[in-house]
Length: 72
Image (tube, helix red, strand yellow):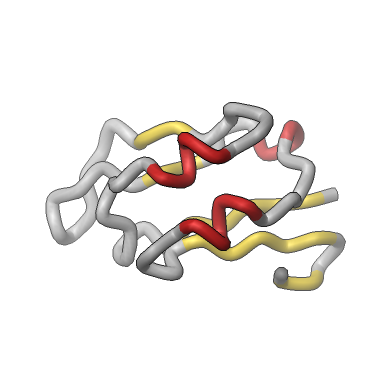
C-alpha cells in the first residue's frame, strides 16, 4: 500500500502535483500553511498507487511517497 506525505510548510500551492496525478486524488487544502499558501493533500490515501509522479514534479521537494514503508 502506498502513502503520500506532503510537507505542508514547504508547499507553495503551485498545483503541479494535481495536474499530473493519474488518479486525480490530490486536492488543495482549504487551510493555509505558515507562508499563506494552500498546500496539497490526499484525503483518499487508499486510492494512491504510489507512482511517485507527484514527488518528481514538485519543485519544492514537498512530497514524499512511501511504498510499503519505503520512501520513494
